[in-house]
Image (cartoon, rainbow, N blue to C red; front, side, top):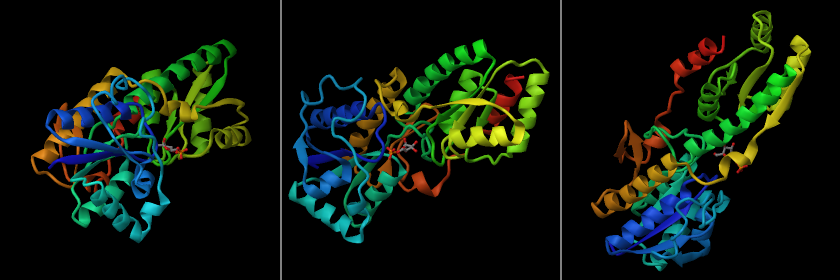
Length: 319
Ligand code: F6P
């Protein structure tokens, strides 16, 4: 193996730059050349590759976003997209590709693997919804960003005896909402994985007021419904007035936490070292504190369950 490529794909997440740096520096340390493709699979199809050197990845370990930029590529999803990408990789004389992204990005990489191109995946998404790893790069930072906001909202909620709904990201996964909910001591956490009835929520709110609670925080994963929709349901069903805050893309930015910077560094190095050792079609995971390299398909063939014990904690600790 002489030359590898790296790209970031799908939604960005804090720590992606630390992963790009780790892939690049490990590869150079091991005697390989590195090409970075800009804008994910879009840039790969366009042949938008740039050489990455040890100095071009200097000073980025704690920078948010991704210096390679990212995209969600419709062109790559087309059946002919994978062959075009394969041809581009060959043009650049690339021996293996490291993809940093979520499960959609991994599925794309897997298609290259199926036609015989060596690939490795590094899980980077704030959603933490990838099986095969306890943590994805960016999740910890996004939790801390959301937590800081919830803490501030709690100040004003308690001053005014108000009910607040804070909408966090997570279209089909509630990991971020649950983590933030437990860490902030929120009264209610609504996630896509656990169905809820508006009548039950109203009843819980009524009972909480009866017990002397003067304010409450609901952490809502965007995949359940919008904060605006929940506020109007609470009004119609229980007569509650809620204030809403949608945290949105602020959760995707900022410098990675030390946890994410270290995780990204370890995962980036492991991806390159495992490729050199001959592994193919794998993802890098972090399980019980150790780096593992299961097949990439683990990411979508298994489903990461939401922690039921943590769901119960929300009720128990917010009495
Ligand atoms: O997958 C990461 C994620 O941040 C989700 O939590 C969110 O629903 C989605 O991306 C938003 O995507 P976009 O960048 O297209 O707005």
